[in-house]
Image 1: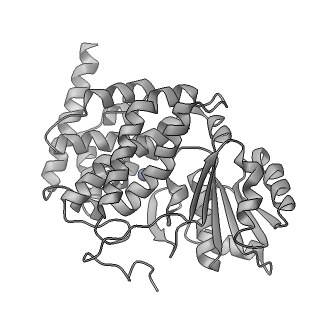
Image 2: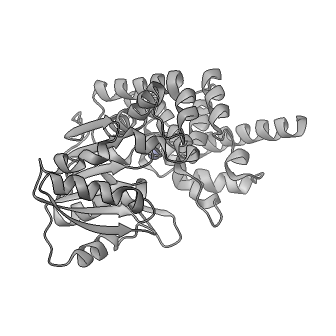
Image 3: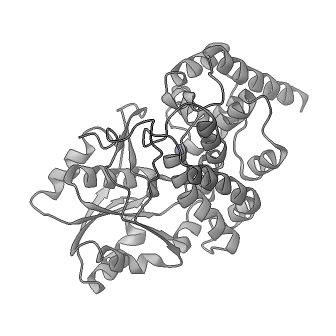
Length: 372
Ligand SMILES: [Zn+2]
């Protein structure tokens, strides 16, 4: 049964992971968390980060009396990825999936847990998105375009956030995570004020809107200093605060609080990318400028300062690296309009509203390019 069919717009639903654990060197303690859930696990990990984590996860599982299989994951997350992982695992019957990596490997682990009905521990190795806390996972088509958002019937049992590991990940990926998280306050507020539904296909409880607002406030205070520490391998206090906002608060905020224009626009923005997809967080960051324009204002000055500090795009020119045509703007807007998050706005938006907001932003960006 569709795990969302049990909810509807007459309800407020709040979902969360069973445990969220954040601290230094937690990779060495993953096994003790897994042992709470079962005696055997399968580590689904990004093939690129596997060398960084495999020995420590194995040692901690051995110490906790947990048997462990390892399934490296690379490439796209396609509709048949879960089936392939399932077949690779064969007759082995682990009780717990440990999903480790960036967004895709974590989603691959979720897909396997969904297919086999297993317990789930997520271990983000980069703070580039808020996938680790949520029940959602995203599938792509062979061209790299987002094709489907699927839902587990439950959120992860444990989210294990090792801040030393995250502080050693590339600074550019941290900036993308900031872009994805910064929009959650505005998106949840728009959902609460509009008529649409959250990721539970229900209305948002107030606590979710408040968490998203606190995510925004935390990142305005600590985001720039956290970015400066990113890549150093040394998590500072600012870094710890920002990571909690980017993974825990952003995750709870979007799932129970709802998404709006910035995430709806990501469906259309994938039409603009060339061979390499643009980081999701950059697309969302641009989408937030459109969101503010639709609300009748501009991105506030403190947000502009943070965008500029970490290198997030405020126009399509900055996002794609080149001028875009009116035709391209219309194509992006047309692809975004049917996304249900568009209903999460204080007023009903039409295609012409979206095109006008995007066109104005681009005209101002072009004007500032020709002045400088
Ligand atoms: Zn996102």
